[in-house]
Length: 134
Image (tube, rainbow, N blue to C red; front, side, top):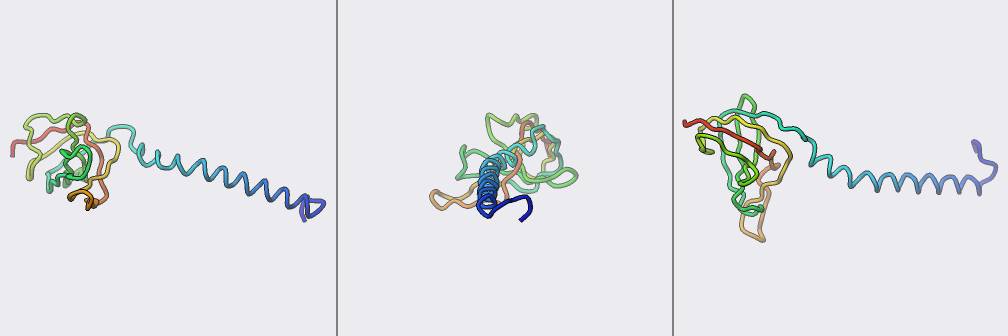
């Protein structure tokens, strides 16, 4: 045994090591949840043509919309009234063009409670967005 004079000392060292490993693991797992939520603390730009709009009927608030935007800077985004600012021309429907900023993530649930299912992998919360007329 390396550095241990007896098996009793070895057992004591292993118990302390196991305790410290477990304590570190239990302290870091809850923090990883916040890492996903704050993975984008600063607003990132997005823009492109709206290809799909899905109302999130089971999410809170139920007026939330999941918007899929195509190239050049596309992805899935969530428009939440009172959180997202909508600028002229106020048209979040296909095939309008959008340009905006988004930050944070949220899940979009569709269906009727209690039979709610996820609409994909959620999306980034829109902070501000402007749309084209056509």
